[in-house]
Image (cartoon, rainbow over all chains, first blue to last red; front, side, top):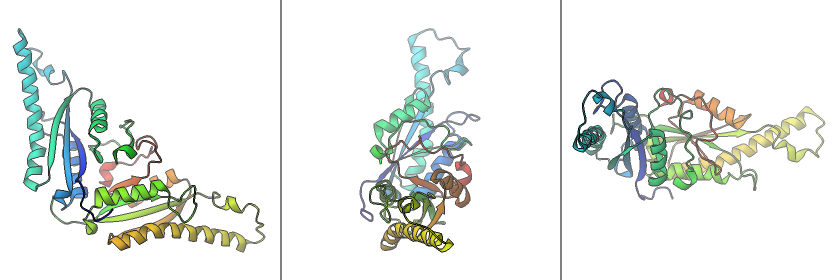
Length: 154
Length: 154
């Protein structure tokens, strides 16, 4: 089993925006999770891994800053959605761009909803070998009540 | 940060004996955790990682099979302890031996007590970059209430 170069190990990393600087800046914990993955897992084996970046956008959170604006037409709402989508893509650009520079294959996508629920849902759907989360100073075992069965995903 | 060969990534793997075959056979979940680590994390980068095998022996559990024996002297108890120690070492030999064959650096040691408590204690003491546990069919987030702060260990 060991020593055989098989399919790359797929590592999902959940990333979000900075709560201080806002879009498109990644949060400190997201960058830490990314740097940790590169430094501790990928190391110099760039072709052995594939990084999967998931960004979950929380509905209304970003629209909130525009509460003073008047939305008169469906187009206005569509514009707002597009603007959020573009901001999310700019966030992902940071991670995908760095992967490209280093030579690590990557994919990224955006989901909308509750981050905890969406991350669990995407883990079950995509079945990565490993899930890496920024800790926000919390212990890793205190905030992820996901019923994901490792024996199915591993 | 990436691309620079630094200290090897230290991965702790908690291993135990087979509940069916007994010592010195490793449990299916221990072998799975080991194989998963080699296949998904170490891959072909043998010098980039160091595997740390912790085996926790539960007091009385192994002595139980000898309940019919009569222990007449302190030497008898010492013999029993020595026998358990030797069995534990034989268990670890499986993992250390395979690491040696492959060329992955490793260390191993035995602790006595409650596995959950001892694993948490050793994680805090040794500060590995990653802890790998066999799942016994349970989800990975359902059985490890360890208050280990990832940001200190990573």
